[in-house]
Image (cartoon, rainbow, N blue to C red; front, side):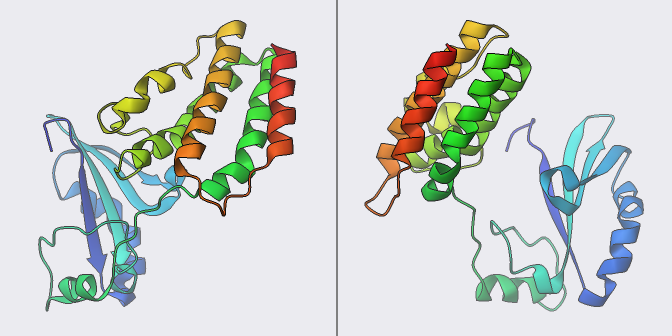
Length: 224
């Protein structure tokens, strides 16, 4: 942690109290300190999350509300700050956390469709859409695979500069300006980097979509 870190706080309720706590969570957040603004986390697929900004010395706090019966399903093990009857400690001892890791087959099944989408938008001159798609590819594919390749826990492009220094120069080439040539070159760089990372991670079970790969690369080249 440092002075720029946010805080993640999980608040666990008795199962029958969870609906009421969900209704009162904004009021609960206000009791913790001078709350400047807060909103729920549907945009990251987690409606139980309340994202808060406290002040006047700014502090980002993620409050995640969960019922006791759901506490065993988690991506990492928290420090227990307070509990009743060792209820949380018992669940931590009986269950395991599971951090989601990128599945190469899942990526391979989608990657060439995503690249075709980017190339088609490039052909239309929708450069902001291309830039957005390249950001998506870095967050969902290239960043996680690069970090995992270096033996670290994948989390989008978080800390990729330090945890996957080997791949940073290649990742930089996937960052495009609002320019037709720059966007096209960045898509090509994303394709090249994915191919290299795929070879680093692949095993004999991986089903490569070679025909789609060849046709999409040819289409991209024709657009350029």
